[in-house]
Each structure stands twice: as structure tokens, then as C-alpha cells.
Amino acid sequence: MKIKLLTLLSLPVLLASCAQDDVLDSTNMNAQAEKHTTLDKSNTSRGILDLNRYKLLKESTNHPQVLEAGQSISMEYNGSTYRFIMQTDNNLVLYRERPGLNTVIWHSNTYRSSGTPRLIVQNDGNMVIYRDGNPLWSSNTAVNYHVANPHVKLQLYSRTGAAIESGFRIKVILGGNNEERNDIIVEDFL
Image (cartoon, rainbow, N blue to C red; front, side, top):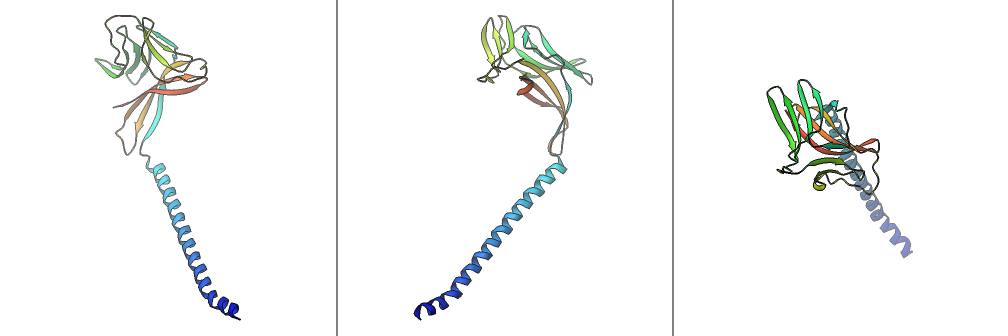
């Protein structure tokens, strides 16, 4: 009889406890649902707002593995020539050339008054400037497997969006194994 009485008295406490768990579970579920809805809305608004957008305008047609001193990769777009050159002064430089105005977009900062430079995109995935056979600069992109058909190329993009000023983006890209493997240089400019 005592057990039945204890059970009968414990039942309301047990039911209240279960009801409280249901309320907490329901509250947690609603909070999680709100969180996902907020994330979904923010993802959607990002797609609608487009904080930044890049559109490929042009790619260089020459994709060499080696640039000897004085050799370059170039492409023209809208009155400008973009030139990636292994200069005879051992400096690797990316220029934007316009009539009457040449602008340095990027350089390796490897100027030396003597020596013969050579840029090589190697089968280990690394791009290296050699001066008289000694490494002077590296992209530090080596991998532990063989990269077939290693090469370097240029890509020019337009840049627009709500969060950035309209302009351009240029990339120097290492390719190989029939894919674009690494963006070595990425520079934005007006």
C-alpha cells in the first residue's frame, strides 16, 4: 500500500518533470530552427547583395615553363598590356603598360647588378628564379609528387560589388596536371 501511495504521489512530480523537458526540448528546437533560418537568410542575402564579384576577362595564351632573361608573358585588354617579365636585372616583374604610363603591379624584389636569371616552373610544383644556377626566389609551392606539364599564366578579372571599389584583379597562376594549381600572385587595382 505504501508503494502505491508513493507511486501515486510521485506521479505528478514525474509528469511535471516530463512536461518541463518537453518545453525545454521545444524551446531548443525552436532556437535551432531560428538559427538555421537566420543563416539561410544571410546566405541568401549574400547572394542577392553580392559583396564582391569577379568576372574573368582574359587569359594569356602563352603558358611557358621557362622564362629566360628578357622573356615575358603578356596579354592585352582594353588598351593596356599586362606583362610578366623575367628582367635581365634578376627581378621578376608584373607590369601594366598603357600609352605613356607603365605601372609596376608586383615584383619579386630580387634585383641584382650581375648574373643571368632564369624563371623555371618545376615538375615539383615550385616556381623558382635561378641566378647563374643558384636559387634566388621561390613560390614555395612544391609538392611531393610529379607535376606534369608545369607552366605559368596570367588571368585578368573585372572586380565589382557593394563592399569594394570597381576595378580589376590580375592573377599569376601555376598550372600543371591539367589544372590550375596555385595562385602565386593576386593583385587588385583600379
